[in-house]
Amino acid sequence: MLTHNRSGNYRFLGMTGRPFSGGAVADDGYDIVHARFERPLPLDEGLAAAAEHVAAAGRPVQSIAGFELRIAKPLTPADFDGFNQGYVARLKALGLEVDGLMPAGRTNVAASVGAVSQPSVHAFSYTMAGPRRRRAFVVSGAPEDSGDDTATRLDSIMRNLSVRLEKLGASWDDATMIQLYGVEDLEARVVEKVLRHTGGAAVHGIQWFPSLPPIEGLKLEIDVRSAGTELVLSRG
Image (cartoon, rainbow, N blue to C red; front, side, top):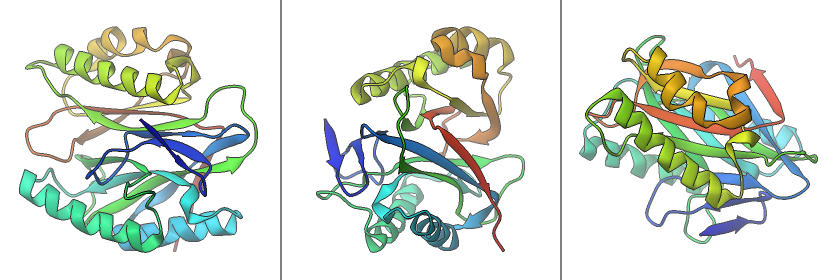
């Protein structure tokens, strides 16, 4: 069910008890801005920098619709739960909570190249007034939920992402960026199992990060967004 974040001008796929939403879609008359730091910032510094940036852009902190995080290595389920407790407390302190739900989507991966030494913010997305011909949205990273090989893992991810897009009232044709996280031999499978199923979005190709999902044992993750503006932010 979509929940309306009126202060942030987007609707989101709220998940009770979860530290992030399944994704967010901008209200009519609003677009998504995607902002990436030149280098990932430590979690507290990155969250504060994101809040400062949206304020300088004339937007409330509630307009933040998604975060992309980096961690040093995949975590055990127990350690992942502990990380999420601290993360949720930080977002609540910022005011990023709607009806007891966390509205911002999230991708959280452990990079195998260009790794960080502590949890860090790589990028964030927020809403800004401005009409778009296509739906503006951000969908949280989805790891595989089944499969013992690359092909079936990708199939499970694509099914989950397609369901989320449908719930958001968006489609693959709306997408402007697809991001893949994994370290296995992927080239042939990505074309067959991902890009051939993304319609017009395939023209953008796919951005690959040699990374692993945040929980030990998982192999692949994909997220997708439709943003009218892409920024690179220098800091420090």
